[in-house]
Amino acid sequence: MITTNKYLSALLFASLLTACSTELSPDLQAKIEKDKPGPASTVKAAGGDYDVSIAGQGKFALVVPYTNASMTLASIEAAAKAKSGCNAKALSNLYDMTRGNRNVALPTKVVGQFGGAIPVALSC
Image 1 (cartoon, rainbow, N blue to C red):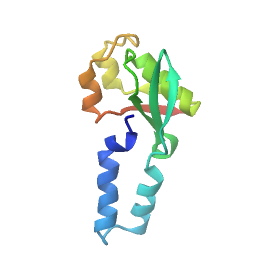
Image 2 (tube, rainbow, N blue to C red):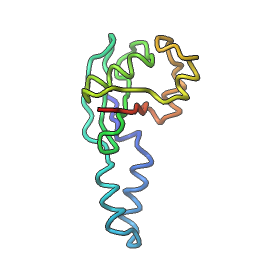
Image 3 (tube, one colour):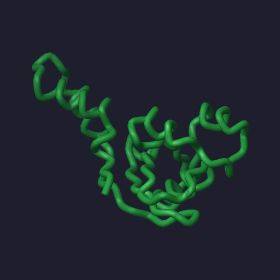
C-alpha cells in the first residue's frame, strides 16, 4: 500500500526544519502543524481505489492511485470529493496537459511529477 506521507517532501522538510532549528517562530511552527495532511484513507471512485488525505486546513486533497485503474482528472477529482464532501478541481496545468478533457488517462509520469500524490483544490 502506498502511503501519502512518503510523498509529502515539502511538509516533511518543513517539519525537519522545525525539529532542527530553534529560529522558527512559534507562529510558523503552529502553521506547519496545522497544514500537515490528515491520515489517508482508501476511497472507491470512478472504478478505482485511491488513497486520499486532506491537507492545508481542508483547502486541498492529496490523491494517490491505489489500484491500476485508469487515472483521469475526473477520477482524481471524484476521489477527493468522496473523501472531503467538497467540490474538487485538479490543478490547471493538468487540465492544460489533457486539453481540458477530464476523461483522458493521465500518463504515469504525471504522478511522479507530484511525488506520487496529485494535489486537488477543494472548495466547500
